[in-house]
Image (cartoon, rainbow, N blue to C red; front, side, top):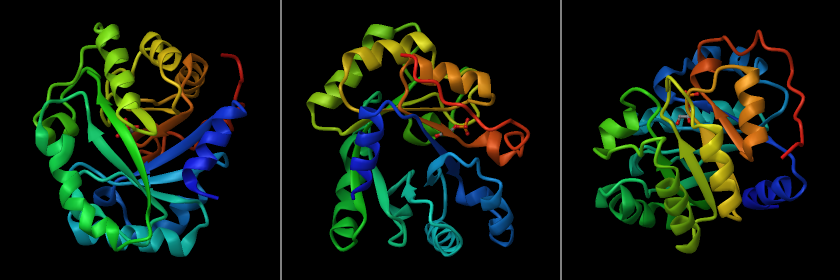
Length: 244
Ligand code: 1GP
């Protein structure tokens, strides 16, 4: 079964998914086994990538992870050099909140011939950068402005435009290490408007926040920093509520 189907099925059955983000830059290969053991049991898949990572590091990182776990590995690349064949799939991101052609279509054209030769499952994603209270790496690297959390309608319309232009998922991103995550209001309004799966990430550090974000309508939540810092392991295993 394809990875997209796995997500779609989860959404249909109102199951909530958790993804742990691994930034190859901060990943110690020697520690990989211990790291993977500490993954929350309900981790549905791993995302691997970062805004600025050397090509070879991503490849090594993915290969080491694949040797040590059966959890699917999906690339979350900052640019086309981070494509690693050993992964299962790739979030084929288009930064639709921004107006920098390089991140709307330039990187995608550069990636195309590499992807053509790979067997990675390609998942077209409308990637929406939202203000998380401090400058994010995405903002810096892409040279685009995040959307203000107050502009709920613009965010909803951007997500809709993403769906209408064929994206299979929407990713609401507050930026890694965000001070505040995407608001529940934004999540619920976007969820109400679009019919494709909704991924939410950036600045999610507690079980309480995670639950709120699921309840607001996120189908997939991405946690990076909190898990990287080891603060996540102290949290009890999550009970995923199905309330809408
Ligand atoms: C970043 O959404 C992810 O792209 C995760 O963010 O590192 O803040 O969990 P954090």
